[in-house]
Amino acid sequence: MSGLTLIASYPKSGNTWTRAFLASHLRGGQPLDLNTDLSLILNLTSRSLQDFHAELEHSDLTLEEIALLRPVTSRRIAEAQPGIYKTHDANLSPPGAREPAIPADAIDRVVYIVRDPRDVAVSLAHHFGCSPGESTGIMADARLTLGRSQRLLNANVAHFVSSWSAHVESWLDAADVRLLVLRYEDMLAEPFAVFARLCRFLDFNDDAATLRRSLEATSFPVLAGQESRAGFKERPRNASSAFFRAGIAGSWRRELAPELADRLIATQGRVMARLGYG
Image 1 (cartoon, rainbow, N blue to C red):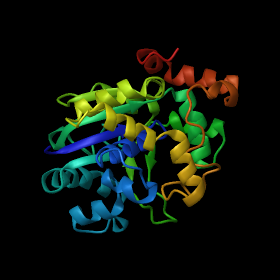
Image 2: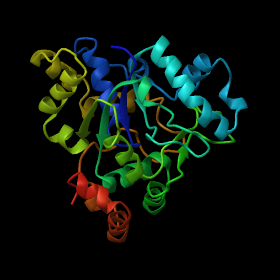
Image 3: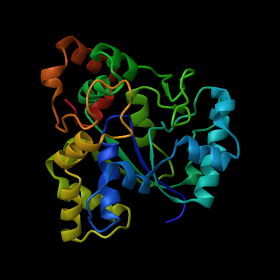
């Protein structure tokens, strides 16, 4: 495998579950330690990774300087450290940049995970410790950049996410990229079939016994139980609930006010329809 293989998604869409499955599967379906074994699937925006390959500290740079540097660093990582990486980057040029943070010539293939934005809004509110009204506003922000706090040194460098619809279509319509799109809802409904497709796309072993062991080792109750006992270092400090909180589809029907669901349809409806989210 040469270049970058990306597990890409808008935040709170199933990326961490996918990484957990792959980390277990790469070890023959062995049980997973969330706080150590996820390092098998590195975060492409990791500050330590980016600092190392850029040969400088991103904390010294402005947002525009980071946006200009990221494509250079992505190409360096693709050349020197190819492999599988998580990312929430949109496949769009950030403000002040001339190309996306991860240019097509650095990419080997992309797994793009998408989730009903109404469920994303609920999960995002818990994740960021904000209200569902605020999370629906965040999802409509075409200039959204994460990891840009001036008060805290983030574990990740600043990365451009944009709105939910723009993020989704930036990857769905990516040119010159080998792409597999997975819906979170299908992953829940038919995990064996969907994760078998994932393994074949990545040229991994899709042996049925290994697949079943990997799925059992990374089921929601198992991951939630681990977090309850030992914590999860990727959970934000300001989160209002556990990282592995519910793990179901359709919770928006109970947790999202009707006017907020309507707002999401008004702002994201065209792309929702494209993905079968009625």
